[in-house]
Image (cartoon, rainbow, N blue to C red; front, side, top):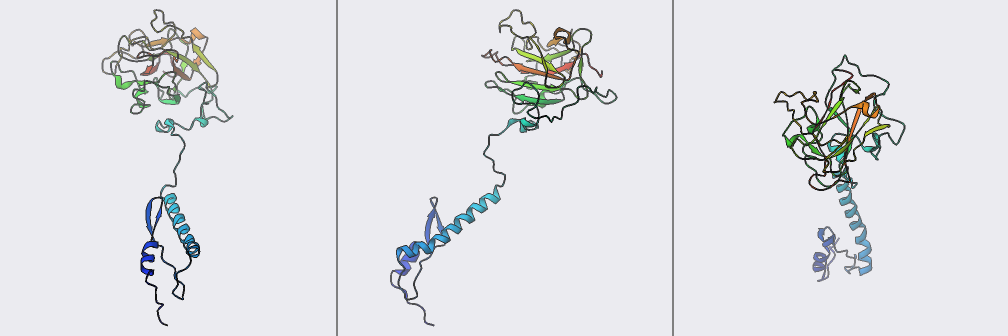
Amino acid sequence: MNAIERPPCTRALERSLARKTLFGRDVPGASCHIHPGGRRSSRRKRRKLRTPRALVLLLTILSACYESYPLLDFEDEDPRADAGLPPRDSGVDGDGNGGTDEDETDTPDPDTPPDCAKASARFITNIVDFEFGPGQNHNQESGFPHALYGPPRANDTNSVVSLGNGGFVIVEFENNIIVDGPGPDFIVFENPVPHFVELATVSVSNDLITWHEFPCTAAQDGPDYGSCAGVGIVRSHPDNGIDPLDPTVAGGDAFDLADINVAEARYVRIQDREDLVGPAGVFDLDAVAIVNARCP
């Protein structure tokens, strides 16, 4: 069978049609369509013949992109994941007042006492919930949550985490709870730098539903700071021999459950005072220590 003789314009037409553009990039693969009689097809017919090929090419590219990025998610990133915490709808509810949006919860039964035969903690071991506020964000990315675990570290700014304006954190202690005993029952340690008064409100709960608050309504410049946290200078450090469980020498701010008529508490919530702003308006948490513990 003799080869079909191509008109003079065919080669130029093929070169032109062999380069199309898709989203601003040249995409090869198209060709000139020639009728058996050697005549070029009409513009309308060429368009009809080329369209399926371009569509297939587009679908192939989209399929390859999907296979390369199957987990692509355009939702806002959740900083809770970086801290190793579950999504907000799986734990404490979003208003920061404890409880859940559903009936299910994985929190311990408040009627079940801790097993003191097991290892028990006197310092923070877990972050139950948190939400950072705007503004000062010291150590939130590089130090949270591990900077809050363990005893306080006086004069070490790397051991604190800023909560941001109005931010909060809820903490617990592995296999232990705070009980009302003689004198102060727990201590909250804030910024270890002297002469920085950065106030926060402290609340306690035994079930993440009912919260009991130590009132904190003091002005930023005092002089009476009442039951606010963020006033006392931190004096204890693992290297200086000062007992972090002794409120008379440890520094920080001590709290007595008897002041709010509470017998025991599993959880402590520290919330920055949203009404206070400026350089000294954001609370920096260092540690929380149980003085009177169910499991010493």
